[in-house]
Amino acid sequence: MKFIRICLLVCGLMLAFVGVTYASSFSVSADKYGKVEGNGIEFSFPENNNTIQIAFLTKDNERYLIVGKYGEPIYAAKIPNVKYVRVKQVYDTETGKYAYIISGSINSMGDSDLSLLMGYDEQKEAWQLYVNPINYYNPLGKYAEANIYVENGELILAYRVMSLHPKAQEYHFFWDENSNWFGYKDYGIVQH
Image (cartoon, rainbow, N blue to C red; front, side, top):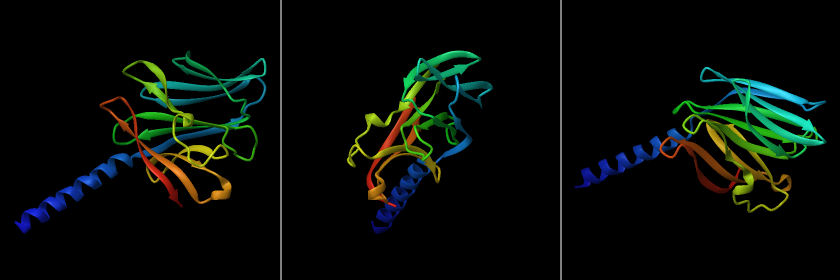
């Protein structure tokens, strides 16, 4: 009887580690950044025998995010008037899913005025906004900056207030093939 309990405990621990491994499978495959000047700036990324173009354009003093595939626009949205932009293409080595961390700042200090996780949905044949920080609980208040990043294979949304460093509210994301969407685990406020 004791042997069976030990075996069940060992199997339970093994399953717990399998879940952690699944969630820790992201890597940054490309990182492009620049300053939006004149009419705008564009970045291109290879993805599954396609080319994804992500552009930040200015029209009538408004900033727009335009995404293209095969040279044709597939998504357009008005965004904050950020001046410095960065796009990281991330890749889930477990599922083969590509996604894009899109971030921007009004100033050169790196403040987070824009932070999104987006990507192309092959099943729906459409560009998707997967993670927008305004849709997640932020207990640190209105001055907390939201950042999406990859660290140690984990895809993380973190809210931080510089004066509260090293505390952060964190959400860790994983690609769920069954729902064809990003799932997440709320880690709460963590110390770094």
